[in-house]
Image (cartoon, rainbow, N blue to C red):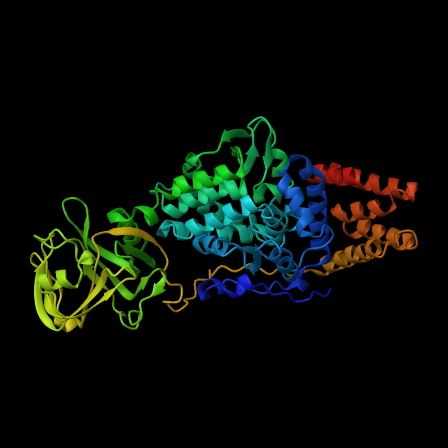
Length: 582
């Protein structure tokens, strides 16, 4: 199968730390059984979802032109998505939540290029190309929803995570990989399930990213839209699951009006959802998102925001009232009686930025061993340093090249030689450099001349705190890929033969030669009955080709399918659904 390469400029704009998650799709990895799985799910979806999905999904299927008969190539996906202002990249299964969100912010869908096994055709807890290609891609053809998705990514990527979140991500990733792999013992899967369950039941304070993940789950993945009495599906998890798309419409599944409360409702990725949230329209999703964003450290800042970064022990950023942004791993702070941050400190590489662009000369090479600074107003002076003009600075003895000593309201003292200052675009001082500098707080020495030049950040307060660096290019890209890799399935000789049989039927269907190749179809069916008694999908595909031309052969196939239904009750509904499409 040949696919013309088609690039997408949105992918070229991705920062290096996101590009590390990208991988080739390797289209040749898809075997004929995989193609049959895709075709079955898509045919079922188009038939059933046209009745229960939001109209944007059905329109999106037509607009994007995603094939029902074959798995789309990543090149083809990008050609399709380019026309609606989005792009797609292949990744290996689950990626960290913040990275996933940031891809969305860049209007790039991350697509797990693997595809579910035939045994998991109704639903898989692992992300796969059916979930992304058949779930997410069509619905983003709606401009309102696409903008919500982008905005969600923009806000969600700033959410601060915890050590527990990272542990949870790795556990869920491992479980999803094991469940999709062939030949993994039930015992090993149970151990992985127990680990996920244990982490889910662990009593920990909700982190920002865990709340964002909940919101994402109940909207982007499992969202319903319309009224409680007649909801329609828009969530990709439901759109790509032929099992849950039917289950979710039943009365047993509680329908709840969507609100910010969904952020505090956890979920179990391995089980059908007992309740779902219904939004009246896509515009309301934006309202709730903004309501939630107002609770986040990225908008509230303060000591709580900084404390979240300290507890996360991961790269994060604070922004001061002057707009100066400090990015690094924060490890300590000092608060006053009013719980205002009067001093902060990072450890290791730190970079300073303004408006998401690194301040020239203040990258990690300048601050390889951390950064610290007092904050607030000076004692006895109503005017904040950031608001001082040149004359004000002179009035308070701030002269370049002259020694100075001053005290903050917090009691922190600074004494040293004033070298120079840097102002922001508004003309406000945001950084002052001192040499031969001492910084003290009560009996504690915070900085000495032996530590080098002292760059003092200027700002009354912390107005924002968020995950990641302010400037995506400030820090070298570190390998953040999970050590748990997708298990490559080894195909047995028996499975090779079955794939060859699927391929022969596929070619006959594509070339429209069912009538002339009826003998070959009979031989194929005979081999399936003799050597692959449990396979139900290939007999269905053969029946589709002969049902209107050979009554006796058709009845033989139906008889065989009925035997499979008796021996394998779990696939009985799948067989019936397949027959209903013919």
